[in-house]
Image (tube, rainbow, N blue to C red; front, top):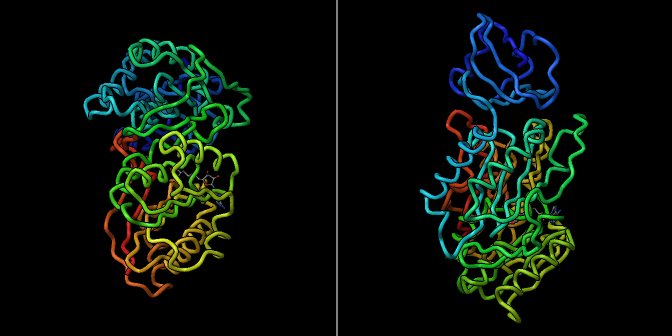
Length: 394
Ligand code: SAH
């Protein structure tokens, strides 16, 4: 196995179990590992400290184990997946009759950096975000099929857009096990078509489940506007929560189709819902003030990288300012950011600035984050990415 030697003192974060080794921390590498190979990492004093997937880029090694004797093989993946499954079972997400939609593996949060696995009814959608997870996909699929044999019949691999381009990996999306096209999954008693073939991420935004359930509690008698609706998740919950009307907006016509399908699946013929394929900013500009008393703003990550931070914060300010201007008095605003590069404080400041611009009195009712099946590894605080505020606007 290739050995990576760190510069003096660069093992400190590893001693605190941080799972990333940046390329700048490396003094030299014995030999020339291929991208995605497992390498051993040593301190400047030649002591073993970790092993993990090697990759060319700012994060050079993603740690899989801090134990030298632990081999990375099918048994390793089986143990890790079993641990992830036990956690979901112990918090009551597996084994419910009203829910078969959850995240089984959340990268660093499950000590598996670069790997995401979402479960949709009898199908697991597996996504690699690192060259190493891609190379190990077959062993992981084998372990997954074992660990989830009661729950899962199909494993779909979907990494064409999540892997580093330059690594020449040429990933192909497709089934590694099974092949059922039955794609209806249940989330807290509501049904959703999951488009793992063409949809964003693994086909659905599992991470908003608890926040959607919270919205349901506030929907009664309100006129709801769900901006950036994608599959219409928030809209479907608002319908069940007895909203007076629900309007869903997304610039993608495909998303609008999906939303209409999902509304139809749960509330066929219900005329309270209308969907609009339109740019969110344009929609907010042209709509009359006081039309809505519950607005959801769940935009895509405005900052995918740190260098886009300034523009992203401006985007959040602009978007939220329009909502504050137009929401009915006594209205409730659910506003989110899923950009990892934007901190909780920065997002708050952007929303507060927007509120101040409108001059309205605003109270924070809830501070939201990602759900328990998207856990944050305590040694990897960067894993906290979803931020939300629920605000009461006088
Ligand atoms: N709220 C959704 C997830 C939103 S994902 C859920 O709970 O599942 C972000 C969505 O924003 C995508 O569907 C994308 O098509 C849409 N989008 C991106 N830019 C947009 C814009 N300028 N106006 C409207 N929608 C936009």
